[in-house]
Every structure is written in C-alpha cells, then in structure tokens.
Image: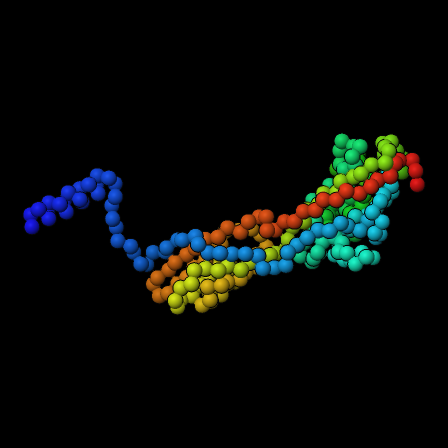
Length: 255
C-alpha cells in the first residue's frame, strides 16, 4: 500500500515538474472547435465582354466616342454580354490600355442623377485618349463635351499617332450580397444560431444567411446550460469577379 502511494506521489510530482496541470472541464463554458463546413449557394457571378456603343461590332477607332456597357443581356447571336446579374454585381474597377501607349486611356462616367464621377455599369471611352485634368474640379477633360465634366471650347486635346493595335480591357465587379450555407456538427436537441443581425435560432445544423461583406461568423449551439461554438471566416474573394478582353483598335487618322 505504501508502495502504491509513493508511486502516485511520484507521478504527480513528475506531472507538476513537466508543466502538465490537469483541470476539470467546466460544462458551462463554450467549446470552440472550428469544424463547420460552409459554401456559397447564391448564383455564381460572371463578367462577359461589354457591348461597345450598343453594338456587337468588336472594333473601335481612335477618338470615337464609345460606350462600354456591362449591363446584363445577350448579343445578336444569343451569347451573354456584360454582367451575368447586374442587379447584384456592380463594376468596381475598369481599365483600358492600348498596346502602343504607356498609360491607360481615361474613362468617363457621366450621370444625370449622381455626383460625377459616379461609377455604374456603363462608361464612355475615347480609344487612345488620356485626358488632362481640370485643376478646379480635378475632373478629366473629355475629348467631346460630356454631361457633368469640365469643358473648354478652346481646348486642343488630341490622340497620339498610332498604327492599328490591340487594347486590353480589365474589369472587376463586386457583389452587393452573397448567400452562404453553413453546416455545423450535428448535435442532438438544442438550437443553432449565427451572430448575424436578425438571425433566428433553428434546430437544424444547416444554416443559411445573406451577407453584404466578408466577415467572421460564429455559429452557436445551445442545449440547456451547454454551449458549443464554431467560427468561420467568409473570404473576400467570394464577393469579387474579374474579366479580361482584347479589342482591336484601328489606326489614327482614318474613319
């Protein structure tokens, strides 16, 4: 008996010296285990090539006033154009550069109802033209008069002499919202909830919610005094889509 007591005392001493301290689990404290599975269930977004001045003609001339329109639709052949869903996705960045220039062309976003330069899914493009900036408004001068932009009847803005070339169009769009489905570990009884405003507790371990931005979400399962939580990080990438196209640009000085 004394030998057993000595062995137990020795084991406890070794445990304390090695830094291992055993404490009982408090059932009232949350248990955080990151094992929840989640995915996007809202329709996937896509950006197809835009209409150019309401036309399927995929060719432009330098200095012409063109419109790049990313509104949802179909071309004359039935192929999708612009954003797959322009009610949910909004163009955020748009850049156009001709191969024979070292800088991007200037894009203009005229609007009758929003402050310039309000950005939507349609803009004006003068192929080959990079605009000077008007010092008072800090807005660019268009090649031709545009609603909301500075204009000087004496201005002599021009486009550099260039031969036939290609231009690259780069676009990105952001979702106004996405819907995700979260599958938490299945527990018997109790209720699940999300730390999302307005979310109502449910008995199902499969939860759905709509988000307008990426965020960290905590899923909580509660049964009486027992609580278990899981944390997920909704990635930024789920809110963004990108597109890239090459478009022919004719030479300057021709029609």
